[in-house]
Amino acid sequence: MKNIYFLFSFLLMLSPKMSSQNLNHVPFVVILDSTQTIFGLNRVQITMTNLTDSTSVLVRGESGVFEVNMNNSTWIPIQSPKYYIDYPSFRHRYSQRSNRDTIRYFVDLYSLYFHDSLSFQSIMNTGKQILFRYSIDIADPSFTNLKRVVSAPITLNIPPANQDDIAAFDYIMARKDTLTAISLLSSSIDESWQDIIPIYQYCIQHFPNSAIATMCALHYSDFLCAGYREGQKTNQSNQLIIQANRSMIMSSNIPLLRSKARFSTRCAD
Image (cartoon, rainbow, N blue to C red; front, side, top):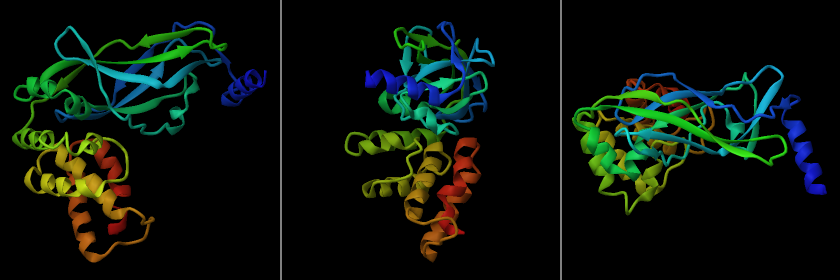
């Protein structure tokens, strides 16, 4: 009985709106950036359809997944530690979504290639048009029904890889089994393991025109600025490294990485 009381109290706190009784809501996906790199990383906005001002829908946030179709046959899930751009409370298991709620993620093709390098190899020389969609579980207010809903597919135009992209990816793949944490290179986790620092440094130095190098510059700066608050500076040697990293990040054509540069390089100012 206490559990039932807690559940209904929790739902009341989430929103004053009535949850919609029908499960005919589907995600609606809008791509906010054109794809400038073979690794994706462009921003995506997701809303739910068929909601009114007086209704909301219960979604199970941890069930959300992006999928891509590379060859018009099989949908492949992207095994990514999702980066929530501006809706961190969506990490809760269940959340109510209204017609005014939007969630922004990013398309993380790096994670796809990391776990399925054949996908990268199949498009690295020529690029490709691939299909992209988002799916998630929704529930009715009583939690007696759960339904998997899928967005309409969107076409993504993936450009070919440049030579630095290919060389950086090969370098990462040669080390993926011994340093599995590099699977998080495209994630928002603002920490680094000491043994990965040489990988960051090598990619930055040898593959400067690759998106991987820009991701490395972001993580390396995060590492050097760890523990520093806004307005605090690291030593002069690190400042020079971070300032060079910032130049690389800000010259990138990937908006997501540029948007994170200020915080990641904060201790160089």
